[in-house]
Length: 561
Image (tube, rainbow, N blue to C red; front, top):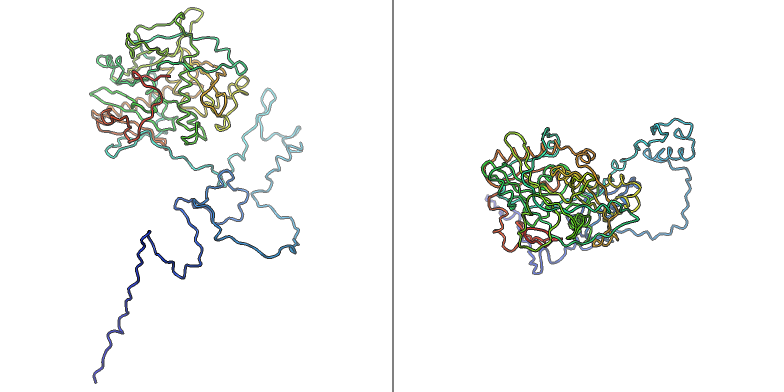
């Protein structure tokens, strides 16, 4: 008997789904019936993922950054709960005392006992928290509760991601990475004082009346129209002349100070190095922020990156550089009738037929023996000169510290503390501007300055960054100040020698040293020879495609203030 087999029942049928064509965008045009009544809350992939629900942590909320986990689109009311029942008849029956969690028990017991005088720290008791000095004053010990907030999630704002000083290109080859812990351990002792080769320029004498300025007798900061030259190494005609006969490593004091104090820096910087035969030339890139003075670089809370604000890092750097240039010239005795100290040669960056007013600067071209046939030649600077009672001149490096907003900077009020507690003001500046002060000290030591004069300049109004007053001055001997700020010149020379040895081992070409913007690392790159050439950008744009904004008017490779 033959049996017919229905082949259609063995295989499932396939029904083609309807594909909707959305002319206005992407996705379905009509919402399916199963999702019509479901509420939708928009979200962004940039939203932070935090705790879903925590009913116990009521005392450890991050009050300073409450919107840390907030959505980009705001909070919606789709999932809001509305209780409409009457609660007027509700009464609390259990009146038992709620026991505190273990981490809150006895929290203020020591504070309560110390106030009432019945604790062990009171008079007549046993002092377990302090140490009695010979003068009879109690020195408070470290509070063991300090820093406990970090254990419960109050870690402050997320770290800021800074941008590098130059965009790293794909054709750059990374040669070496030097981390700060290794650089701090380097040392090159027994480096003798530099020997003068050539001295140039003219210096004006310091006005001692500025030593009598205080908070009650302040003096406005003047705007002085003078040219300040910031010429790089290879553009210096004197270094070009000396490189033919003396030395094999050439740089300026600003470049050397940046390398020597690199372990104290937080912001990114870069230095271009050219190796030609057995000679090394260290340069800075043109039209960059290398010569700008940083403000609160090493602070716990550095300035916020808001370019529209006058308190952004770049705007504060421009303001600090402007203050430093004007202060260094205002405290000098200016005028045609005033005496001036002239070096052997005139200023090498101006010609005799030019009728321009140049800032008071004295240049010393010095050489140092670093061992292993390495001879360093560098241009150093003096800002002024002081006449001693014996008639001998003392050369000075004049710098200015500036106060912008003590509340935003978490600092001390200069007008309240400068006359009575100047040490506290200086200690606060050493904490917030450790790198800048270390650079100034290294430059003064390299130049052989007899004094390092520091001025305290503050804004008249914290919201006005264009008007300033001088509140006081202070002077130090560079070597003693270096010891005071824990700056080791042996370590500084060791860092410089380490970088020189690395470059000496490479082939002839162009290299770049860059500080990582977010890590304590210095990287050495091998870059093409035509990188950063002025012929690459005729329209004045940077290497990363962004136009440079000139801070000052450049004339004859100088900055006009």
